[in-house]
Length: 161
Image (cartoon, rainbow, N blue to C red; front, side):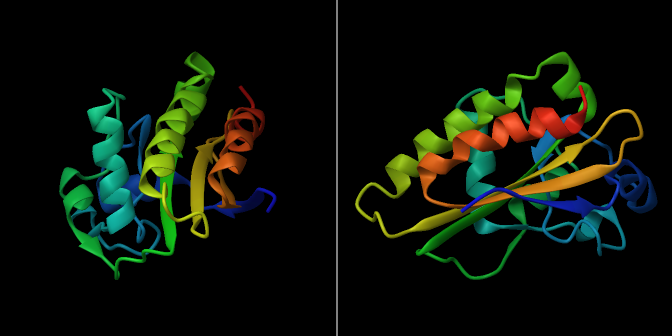
């Protein structure tokens, strides 16, 4: 399946509204657009696992709210895997390869996670902040693990760095 691109709320503006920092790269809370405060931010189980995977690989990951990475909602789905990362324009401008590194870590983890189950699919979204106006776009890939490679190139391209 191809990568889809959609408009996303401005992460900088929304973070200011709910009183949370804007990290350079972080797990995107599922309810970021609707939370009334940073304390209400929540992530799904797969995103919590992704946070651990990246942390264990010594990948520098920030946070919108450290409590959110541990407060999960939704039922575990063993057929599909779904998570979203935010990537700031400043990080992509300074280190455009960082998305490729993160995706390599994620691909390796998912290859192990799905080793015996080739029928499982993934959905990984990247919320990418664009230069110079800090608008955001959401890139979403849904399909098998092999197709993740195109996300990194798409992220750098739309960021305008």
